[in-house]
Length: 287
Length: 287
DNA sequence: ATCTTCCTGTGATTTTTTTTCACAGCTTAT
DNA sequence: ATAAGCTGTGAAAAAAAATCACAGGAAGAT
Image (tube, rainbow over all chains, first blue to last red; front, side):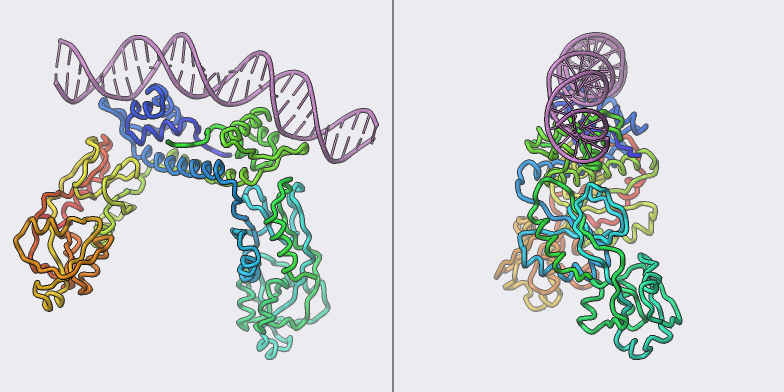
């Protein structure tokens, strides 16, 4: 699956590209020119292309060679930098948090400033991705998720509570419709939202039209703009309800899904992780 | 000088980080767990830090390990991508051009659109850096420079012509001062500009005050704003003179420095390079 | 408790890769 | 013509990496 060139020859190649000379490159690396020659050859064999032109008077990068050299230079620089960090920096790195985009936008981000005041020494790096997560692949410390998928058993799990959802619309839209002939706003990342709601309650909503959005972020924006009624998980609508931008005329219902925080089951105790987790638990409004 | 971790163990480490298991990582790479164990150990020895916690039930990345793994993942992905390009893409890559920032801003960039129309298939990537250049280190194809430094002899040189410079100010400023009690605008990247001018001509400029800027870009901006009189190389002021934003009341003087285009002396004939070089020669106003 | 399973670490050995050495060939400069 | 300065390459040496085989520790099953 992965198709990575042999790594060891890269250093020789990099040096050769830099000095446009195998001999000089070898000299800089305390090698013989033969070693550099063979390293370059190994890469050329791998690529099936010449990376250098060999002229009698010296070597010159080909177009491809120059392209590759540029990337190799960048890569080596990044490794050098990362290495430097690991070797010297005994301090802690950023806390990487993964969170669904809508939850991040409508709930986490507005509160992050507050957490920053609470724990100013913790640098948080938020990456918004949804669905099943592989903490290792995303190299995240922590993920906030709806527990609607199976995650590797090895992760630490902190249960936050069951999700509560409610149909929401703008106060004026409710005034206007009173539950009749409503425009149902759907969200593609949660296509069963309305079905779920209907199976949980016996409220009657007379629907007239339907409209679809890619994320809660959009459908809830639309509902607060008076375009119809959307289903929203509590954390995503709480602020707007408090502010009077949305109302939940049918109240909230608790669903079968829990919200969880996933983290690495490392024996290393990271106080930042504990602190952030507890803060989330406190903040997230759950049933 | 360079401090790069051993490269070969990176693949094993990456896999181990991904699967949080030496055995599984080895399995994926068609190796034995011992090989992975030793690869990780080699990196740990290099860093002088543990990258994994070893618990009886498995291994867990340490904080540093996770940090390093993130970078290694990025690096490998970049190499994979670059490798893919080199292996499949027989097309030509972008033309990388290096140019002094002020020349780029005030002369090249406004004309680049025109070149794009002339040769739409040539993608130009402009990087603005000044002074002595190492085309290899910057992995540029071509550099436009004032020949006031020694470059490696191995480069191709195209002479464009001698630089011409002139004191310039806004028409209204000239109207107001008529050469008396002027505010001299200096540029730190060419500190001898005024001395050079004075040694070339016998015009008398009565200076009252002096003001310093980091780049021609700023000092010329200031002069066209009527803040004083600056020295400007012809290409940098030509457009503003044509537009009536600047005047050169003392005319231009030819300096001892030539402008040159440096490129790789590769036996590979790159038509884009030739075309661009000729276009530059045509466009650059020189004495 | 005991057994089994599932990990990892490591010494000794084998295999593979990398480097060197020594020489050849080529082109430009003297 | 000779010398100097490149690179390529076969054979040998050195170094690095991988394997094998075993050991030890902890969790889970019996």
